[in-house]
Image 1 (cartoon, rainbow, N blue to C red):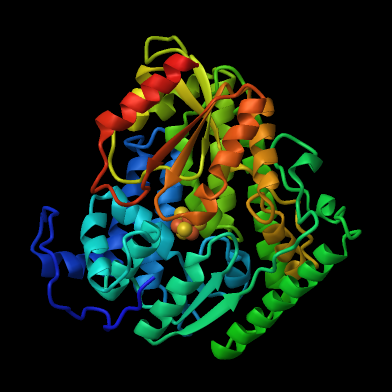
Image 2 (image 1 turned 90 degrees about the vertical axis):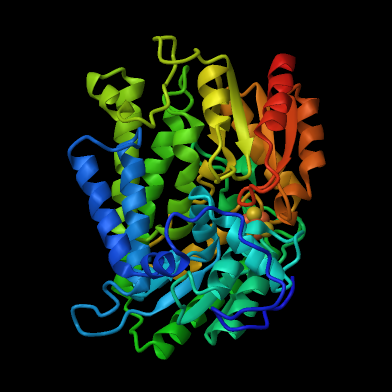
Length: 494
Ligand code: SF4
C-alpha cells in the first residue's frame, strides 16, 4: 500500500476527472457532507419516517441501525463533541474487530472508516474516493474499503481523528492504512497486535454449544500444547487492551472506570443474546428474513457493540423476525415503503424459497439489483451469512480485558483455515444450506486466501460453492449481467 504524501484536501497533479454525477456543486456538497447538522437532520428525518410508518426500510431495526450510524457520524463531525460536562469527546478511528466496547467505556467516539467506505459506496460516490486514493499511490490491488477510506480522508470528507486504533486481527491491510493515515492526519496511532497461535488456535468451531455461535474460546485451550500457546496469546492480548485503555485515558483525560467497562460488556452481551436468537429463527423454513435485509448489520458488529443503542437494534430485529416467523399480522407492517423486498414465501409477493444459500464474506455495497433478482425473483435466499455468526462466548463484565481478548481470539477467521471451514460446514448443517456463495472481494487476502480449501471441504460434503469474484466497494467494473449469469448457472446446478 502506498504512502499518502499530502495533507487532507491537498491536490496532486494528474488526478483523473471525477466520473460521478454531482447533484450539488462540489463545495456545497463537501460543506453539507462534513457538517454535523446534516447528519442530525437526516437522523431526525429517518426517525420521524419510522415513527409514522413511512420508513423505506423493510425492518424497523434497519432504520434504527441507520439512525445510530448517522448519530455517530454527526457526533464525530462535531455534534456532542462537547459533552454535558463541557469536555470534548475525542474521535477515535477504529478498524474492524477493534474492541469498540473499550472505547465506549472510556466515553470516546469510535468512527469506522471501513464502514464509511461502505456508506460512500451505497450513495454511489466510491468511484471518486477511489480515484483520489489511487492518485495518492494506493495500489488498485489493495482493499477498496481501505482505498475508499483513504481517498475520503485525504480529501477531507471524514471526521478528523484524535487517534486511530487498528487491530492486526484478520486484516493485514488495516494497520498499514491506519498507520499511513495517522501520519497524514497528524493523529496518534495505536496498534493491537494479534498473536498467531499455532497448534490448534482459539475458538474451535466444532466446540459450539448452540445454533447461534461458533467460537467457543474454551475449546481453544484444547490445543496441541495443552492450551499453553492460547493462554499466552490471551494474556498477551488482554494486557495490550488494558494498556490501550490506560494510554487512551491518559491521552484524553479519561478515567478507567471499571463500572463503565462492566456496563459496556453487559450491553455487548445483551446484543449478542438477541443476535443469537435471530440466528435461531433463520433456521426456519422458509427463512423469515432475507439476506438483503440483514447483511448490513455487520455495521452494528464493527461499530456499535458496547452501547445501549445496539441492544435496542438487535432486540427490535429479533421481535420483527419472530413476528414474521409466527406469521403475526403486525409483521406485514414491516414490509412497507417503496423499497420493500418481498418475503416471497409463496404468498404472491415473490418466488417461494427454492434454495437456501450461505453467503461468505461481505456484500457489494454500491447500488445493484442483485438481491432482488436472486432472492425475490429466483427464490434463492441468503439464509445465513458468515458475518452474522456470533462466534464468541458471553463475556464476564468483571474481567473486561480478558473477555474482550477471548472474544477477539475466538473468531473463526483467526488461525488455521480449518477453523473457517468448520464454521462454514456447521452453518451448512444448522441452516439446511444447499449451496454456498463466496464473494471474493478483490484485495482481501484474509477472505480469499483460503477459498479453494473451503470449496474442497464443501465439495467433500456434497455442497457446491460458487466463488464470485467482485468488489464490495469499487463498482467501477461491476457488471450485473455477468454476475447474474454466473449465479443463475450455479442455481441451475443446485
Ligand atoms: S475486506 Fe479484507 S482486506 Fe478489506 S478491510 Fe475487510 S478484512 Fe481487511
